[in-house]
Image (cartoon, rainbow, N blue to C red; front, side, top):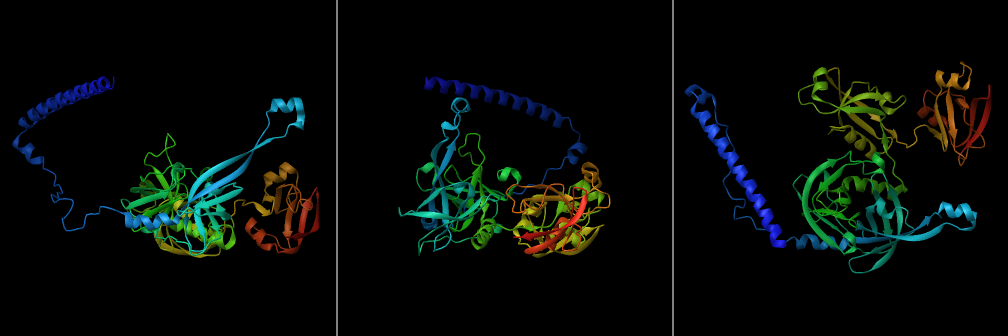
Length: 483
């Protein structure tokens, strides 16, 4: 049967080949007839293209032939670890059983085990890995190449970059050297090291297929910071958190994800650049969290059509400002709609994602230099970044507000002379739930009015604050203790 299938395939290929050859002969015949029918003047107009040719062999016979990367890989294997996770998962009881027995049958619990990889980055036991490797884990165990095992604790995690830092209590450990991932080039040789599918530590080889991959929606439902290195080095489940190293054995990325219709390797793997990972790691070690810079603009990439309309130089790259958040650092700096942002601190910007990532990597209160074009003239603005928050309208923990507008005044029935911030919701677990309520308007904070939410936050101080509020048709003073 096997021979028969082979024979059928061979015949089909042969038939296809005959058809292609026949078509080629017809094409050549027609082309020949066309050329023979051309006049001398027509032939003169058909100039042959100038082609670049290099007939030398791929090797000059002088460069040493690389027959092994063992000396590069061996030290890396010692610093890549396996990370075993365990967590308890609650399994709800069948609703039909609850209908008959009520709460007499409790929800069931079961243990889930997971496997990932990690990279030792310091001799005292700090390990870089992925957030999704340790997320929700009740217990973590790290296995070294020499078969030693250690309990690990989580130092900090960041879902928006899929980076986590864990630590084991050990000394004098081998650790990896970090490279500058910005200097990677497409075509550079890389190795992926980890424990795929639990088979044991494995090294695979490939190249950098692309840089700066973003917009894939792999992190935080599209709300993360994607700047992936793409590689065809084989990455499978279990490789997550492992090392992507260059031909010198230096860490260039943390393996994180693959795209595959079969959930297995098809040559499209992604690693977090080590520059980004190290930046997040330092923040997690120092504070346990990641604080990010905030500029307050909406932008879109420059297209050739937009560049023509704005009289920009040919080939201009950058992003055009389409909206500016009131009270944001961008507004305070004098940035305007239709300004074109070319660079931040001298680093060129070519996309909205790149701008967002560069700003987020900088700590709050950082003064940055924006290179812009306004009305066809180059200019420079200096901006002091604020802190990015996931809840921009949260004035206090669990207290959400909006700027009071005529629409809200009419909807709730608020006196038109009242101005300030309308509290839209107060979460039940907020420490201020007993003092503040939805539909209350904060008119003044410590006897000062605020133009925007950022200014309002800045007026609040730790300890006792005097608020002038409007609630249920009447104004009044309220003393609030801010924790």
